[in-house]
Image 1 (cartoon, rainbow, N blue to C red):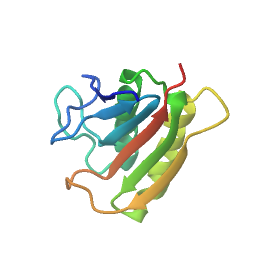
Image 2 (cartoon, rainbow, N blue to C red):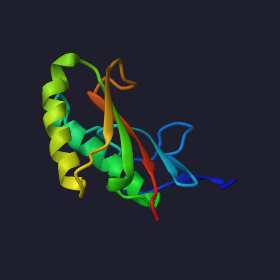
Image 3 (cartoon, helix red, strand yellow):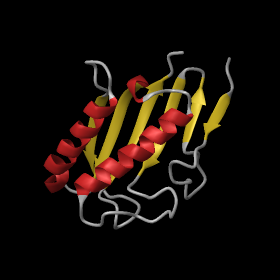
Image 4 (tube, helix red, strand yellow):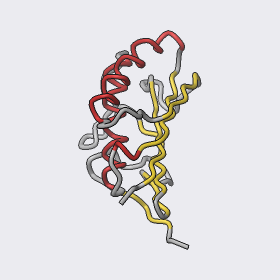
Amino acid sequence: MSDKIAVRTTDAPAPAHTFSQGVRKGPFVQVSGQGPVDPITNQYLFPGDVAAQTIRTLQNVKAIVDASGATFDDVVMLRVYLTTRDDFAAMNEAYGEFVNANTTGDVLPSRTTVFTGLPRAEMLVEIDAIAIVTE
């Protein structure tokens, strides 16, 4: 049985609480929920702009995936959490642009979108991911 390893990178925000940015066990990688946070300043970015928040959030997810030894092509599932159904179209467009630009094949990751409250009022979106490393 392989060991569970914390995934860490300075290219994504440090976790604010008692959890890892990501965890890898064998070929499986789970990325903790990410938000629209600048990894250098730890400031929440783009208040009120769900499209820009979605791109920044996916950049953070991708940085953690990359730090795990996987690539964005190894992502099999993304879960998107939105605070309001009204933001779905703008999120979906920005999401599609990012995912298509960062996926090299025809198979895009699976996705679930959930409407819920988020930990910070300035967060319009949070995204987590599952990847399977193919070395």
